[in-house]
Length: 455
Image (tube, rainbow, N blue to C red; front, side, top):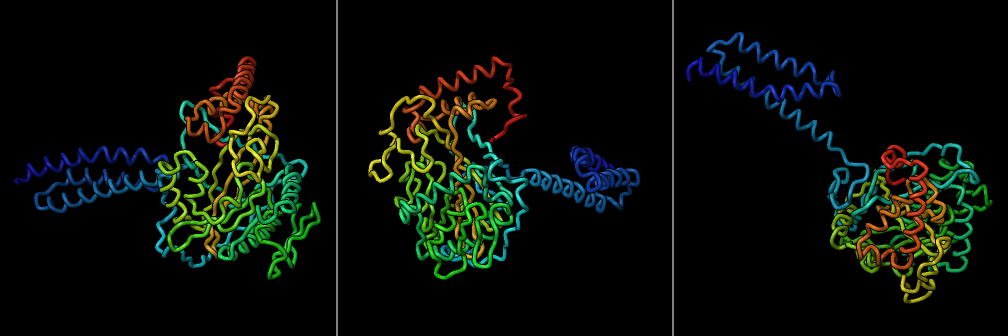
């Protein structure tokens, strides 16, 4: 190939490199000091090659140009990868990169050196004034998506307490007396994890809520109830999960991995669950817990991703999800509308249909998941938020969005959530409250600026 032809080829390569140079320049606003000098230098060198073209320099020039083009392409690919960060509410069906594939054998765990950061005190927390956080985790229709909907959470926000604490504390204390081991159990296999969880709470709570809890030499003191929880005696004076339950508004569960790779529910304090009983689920693997509860589309959409998530979860990660239900009675601990807590045949079939709206309650759970660094157990915290529908429907945008969400449920989700028993009354009421809000000038197009999921 003669020098003139080579020069034309080189010029053609230069022209083809211009889009890459332009793309680099488009990123200068975000990373000026990192990118600008590189792109300008590349352009200068290319122009210089053309101006100082010599036949004997053809090969080095071509090699240099190819290097520049490949370098720019590699840089742009890396920029695209960095911009594709994990969303705040990822779906569990697609495993996320932070949860690296484990190399350990199933059922084994090498203790991690990770230490949960000490949280700052919750700002101005008060057992009388701090209101429950306004979780409203429902979305507009027309389609309801079955997904676990995980999001990252700062470790400072692991446990949420508010001015409903006295009711939760008293309900738990009563149920521990009345039902004891039916609600709180720790299998021998899960004892190390339960003791680790108790130590974690005894460390976290006095730091986060110093006006409510104080650390002592032998445990933790509740400054409101003057109740002392022993965390150091061996054996403990009560089941460790029961002790954990007295310290939080959350229900608690621990999943342990066995050599078959399955995670089993082997410890729990389930006192305020409303619709399910620990005695029915204890000892079950994760999949059976969901299939025995007829969770809609679990096999099709959730099981594989959930199993991958559990295997990959690291102690450094704290994630949360929210769900919601409707209930047609005011009992936080157990929804008696679906039957007696000691009945064999609990279901929505026993619920009274179309009760007055005053009997409709909104029930939302905020669940967190983390892996304990020493034992490797996976801890669920399950915090219930419980409000009359008439209360939350007074909030801007809520009645319209909730009505749309309920209408979006498919037949399987509707059965699971008992829609047939309350939909007529509920939707008529929500539609009326939504109309009132529109009539007074509420602008739906402004909702995203004022409320965003899960609020």
